[in-house]
Amino acid sequence: MAIDKRAAQHPDLAGPSMFSRDPQDLAEAADDFGHVVQRRPQAVLKAASVADIADLVRWAASRGLKVAARGQGHSTYGRAAVDGGIVIEMKAINTIHYVQPDHMVVDAGATWSTVLDAALAYGLTPPVLPNYLELSVGGTLAVGGIGGTTFRHGMQTDNVLALNVVTGDGRELTCSEDVNPDLFDAVRAGLGQCGIITRVTLRLMRAPERVRRFHLLYSDLRSLTEDQRTALADGRFDYLQGAVLPDGAGAWQYQLEGVVFYDGAAVPDDKAVLAGLSDQRSAADISDVSYSEDVRAFARLENLLRSNGQWFSPHPWLLTFLLGSCAEQIASDILNGLTNEDVGPFGRITFYPLLTGALRTPLLRLPDESIVFPFNLVRIPTSSGAVEAEQLVARNRMLYEHIRDAGGILYPVSALPMSRDDWRSHFGPKWSFLDGAKRRYDPLDAFAPGYELF
Ligand SMILES: Cc1cc2nc3c(=O)[nH]c(=O)nc-3n(C[C@H](O)[C@H](O)[C@H](O)COP(=O)(O)OP(=O)(O)OC[C@H]3O[C@@H](n4cnc5c(N)ncnc54)[C@H](O)[C@@H]3O)c2cc1C
Image (cartoon, rainbow, N blue to C red):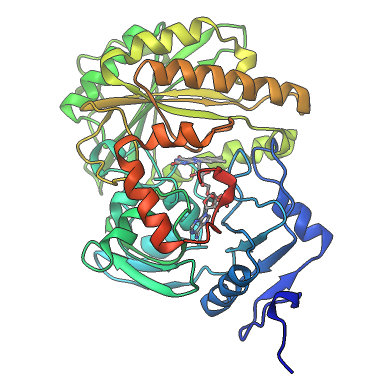
């Protein structure tokens, strides 16, 4: 007697993965770090092998089910969730396969902190790390991955040499610049639309032993921006970011964050590093720490927010890139309409310049200028209310339209509703490439429905 596959409640898995309909697993997979959007799957695959992921994808395809990979669930608007479909939890697909002097091979569910530990054991590091290291490699590569060294080394997706990807027909394909290059280009910063990244070859470089960290304060946005542009042009820092911070009394503080890498006894000369900058020198905070401590600095904020409960509040973030030629004007217009409460006491508005020359990932969209400014509302509200969160999402949408109309571009790690037409215009000249790749690699339109792209 023929078996009706469509009636099967479980995929046939050869490997050790667990297929769960446990209400607690479903509730966890329905939510994310944003705590704004909830979408409940019908089941969660706690993946323990790539073969099981491929089996699950084939099974889901035979039943017309949507599938979303979930790395660490740090999306802010339900992008790793799927209503009524299957979430593939990638956490256990986290093996570090090997480390070589110039590259390493890791599974996509590994976090950047695990990757870094393995690389540092050989005195090596990925050239670009995100500010928060507990994100998964796959989840970050699905969006791009930006860090304080991006102005020099590009996005994290620019530092990937090869990928293994499970596509919509349940095959695991290898891709790189030379092998299946269209898949390689469609998956990096491709918002999970064309496949599930399972394995990654990452470029490595020698890690510095120590860093000299400079946190410089300014009384206004103009002087911050001027010094950021100077430092970007002369390359005095190896890491450059900056932010507008709530000062706790209703006003803003303007901060440049620069880091100089060094080894052994070659301690950088502070006077030389700061020459020509116009910060409030008596307020400068200069510290000297190991490279490993510096790149993990976000962990202190995470601990604080976990202890005061704000880690678990809604986080309706808005991340964008402004045109370098008018970044200061647009940022200052927007800042005039914001109060400290818009980001919360521990939130910030990230603002610093980037050279775009090192950014080559085709699907990473940027304003078309040689310098752009990330402008990110990293909101950490004190209120955990859903109504307040919805209001902030609505504000995000208005600000996004304002920024877009002024030539800015969204970094898709943002909490706001986006229509298919919005996405089409976001990808602009790259839309037809992504659309074609989607038809080739996910013709049943199963993957990552949380972005609502197709
Ligand atoms: C505290 C914090 C700090 C952050 N700092 C930075 C930063 O410095 N730089 C930066 O660029 N971003 C930063 N982000 C944003 C972050 O990179 C993205 O939200 C990223 O998608 C989260 O990774 P994740 O593993 O939690 O992914 P998830 O939230 O689990 O997934 C995100 C998306 O990627 C897809 N996805 C996940 N795994 C895979 C896979 N293996 N293959 C294909 N698709 C997959 C999902 O389906 C989903 O669409 C930060 C976020 C937070 C919360």
